[in-house]
Image (cartoon, rainbow, N blue to C red; front, side, top):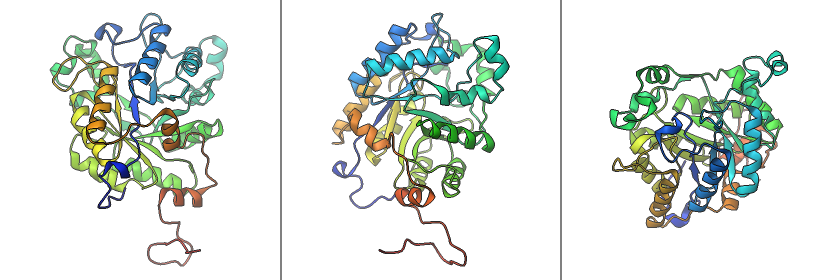
Length: 351
């Protein structure tokens, strides 16, 4: 992103898109009174988040016993109900799901990677599925304090050990094929990038023609294999992000409030919700709705408008497809690919 002399003035910034992750699959249902368990409660939570000002819903689904669902049919039911309840909201399914076969026939057909590729088979289809680039450790415990987990299921040492050792597998052969399948079904990949090498790998995919659509990114600052909390790292990532991309900050615990304040001031977008923190800035319990309301207030104080549902769809480029590599590089504000014998930085020819 280029920052011109007037880039921090709110009238020159895109309207703020607020993502919300209100379902918190890592928490047990007993960890918070803000966790929706029944399907009716989960749908109502989406409505409440929409009414508070969020325009992107990060979707996970729980079974009736409160455990996270791995049933494709359950996700399909949830998406169908959300389409009716919050029709203007961007529905974004978390790409960490590996669906479990629901019967022996499915078990015979599904290989290991196929259970993750089934995200492209959701019906009704979501607007987005999140995609990590490159395999990496996802040790969310690294930045957790005793206060963050006290009184919750994450205080269990065995569960902490499992999260410390958690790996997000995304080898090149997998994520290239996954992106291909999502795009073929009209689902936009929403890239979850936790470091500069991930961004560089993603931009190489664009240059090589493996992806040529709107570039919608989360800068994932959760530590333990992803970015940490140093503001200079966030600034450098923003500086290296193409001008035509859409960049959202995602972090965890009480850090979301100062980091999101910086992101709003810089013209980036933000994510909140109990999946990222159960707490407010002073350590008090804070619901997903209250977190959204705080982001709306922060934006208002800085003079930055909050996007409507239609505006968020436009900012994200939902439903857009680009003609190929040359158009993608142009739309992102990147130099074209080098032609044989060309020296120096490739420049676009003037009409």
